[in-house]
Image 1 (tube, rainbow, N blue to C red):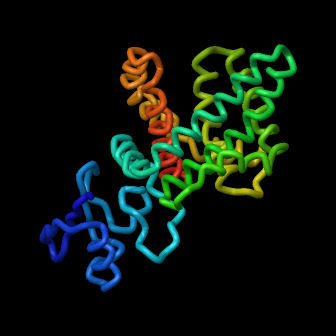
Image 2 (image 1 turned 60 degrees about the vertical axis):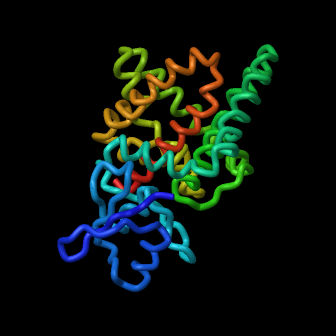
Image 3 (image 1 turned 45 degrees about the vertical axis):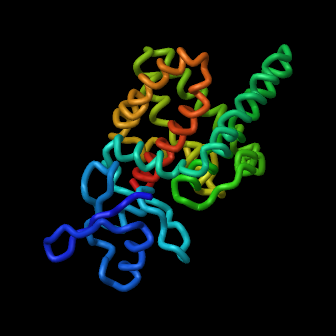
Length: 262
């Protein structure tokens, strides 16, 4: 169990458990702006921000907040928060990553019709996976069934897949680099749709563009942090991907939480 330090009257105090930290907050001794720190955090952060970023579980008896941040949280801190979120949830998270991929692979084995089916279900599974990992990053005790929740919005999800694919392809027709930039510009589309059940595909795409303005390179560098792990997975005959995929997905969910209010 992680041990926390907190600042009071200019002094560093601790170590205390998460439960004790929450108890002190309930007593008013620790305020929302009180600086706290635990191993894995790059720097001290206000108590309210530590919970929002996923480094600290929500206070017992209170609903998990829709985590938000400055958009500048260091990537290593987002990854540390992801590891903490995955504690006790590795099995279901691996399943959420495997099931859509397995279904798509099976469908793709059927010529033409199966490949079309694999494409049209991509959006629904993207929303479902985003729903699971957003809830995991916010300590909302997600269920495996969330991976199928995107099928309730099948048509908007399909619209988002078609539109993002067309937009990215058009940019790739210009040059490779603009195409890559476009893929990052629209990368938050399905997270936005998962987090906002009534939003339409085009509105989500536009929102992703606004959200990622000035943050595309940050997400690119977050992706690069997993490159070494990906290379190591080759030497495990791909078995390591079972853990790498949910680790990446949870880290990106924390990234989304950090930039969502931009």
